[in-house]
Image 1 (cartoon, one colour):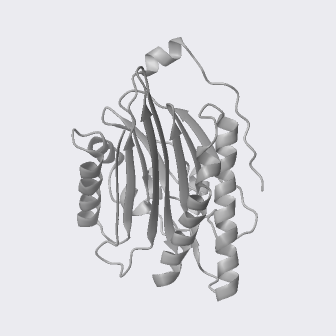
Image 2 (image 1 turned 90 degrees about the horizontal axis):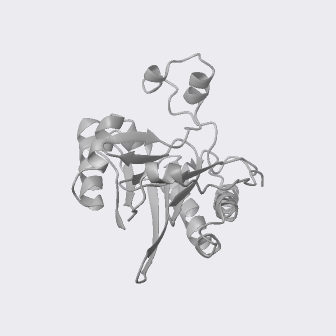
Amino acid sequence: MDLGYASIRGRVRHKDEDSILVELDASMSMDSVSERALIALADGMGGGERGEEASRIAILGVRESRNSIMDNDPMDHNAILNSLLDAMHYSNEKLVKYKEEKGYYSMGTTMTIAYYAEGWLHVVNAGDSRAYIFNQGAASQKTTDNSYVMEMVKAGRVREIEASRHPRRNELTVALGFEDNFIPEPYLWRCFRGDSIMLCCDGLWSALDPTFLALGATSRVTCQEAVNSLITCADELDGSDNISAVLLRPSLNVDEEEAIRKPTLSSVTVRNTV
């Protein structure tokens, strides 16, 4: 397993309001490799120390939930997704309580939490930070932005190509810190040989074309080198926001055609309420 991550404040912002969590666990036996990774990315809102503190509190909540997530059976997808949902709700409760104590009413954060284990990627998402899977230079955005503009795209009122330039593109419909009860979106995917998994904030994906992101993420360099290069490019092309990303390349021997011949996905029903 290869992994790289970085976060910078960009050329305009005075502080970096993004936070990242990386927890790895890998073991080897005579005939197999067992890899697990818990990664999370939060993009804080509220300006200055408030955004910075919002993302830090959210990531701290995931770190405190580490054992309840990683102690699950890797094939028990229901249990894993529900543990991720619990972690996000716990982080939200911590943030809401902090806001009430401090009176910082505009304070909030996006958050994407991903858990990779034994060839499967489990994700919960709130806001417009994203999870991607790249393979052979092709990009696949795996999460849907919780934003006003994306709701307009779904309703057919705005074309997707216009969304990135819309004046209300930064308005979120779901984020941590604003409601006691909210519903993050859970996702589950099978991963295959050659897949590169990325979590990133809008400071990266809004600055770079998806094809450019994919080519950079799957280039023949280490994950850390790829992340550094993509973030530098985004900063040079835009740099108006903080820029952060986590890139993970698991060690897998099964490709998609082999998996189709031997399907293994069981039914999954996740608890999507508090």
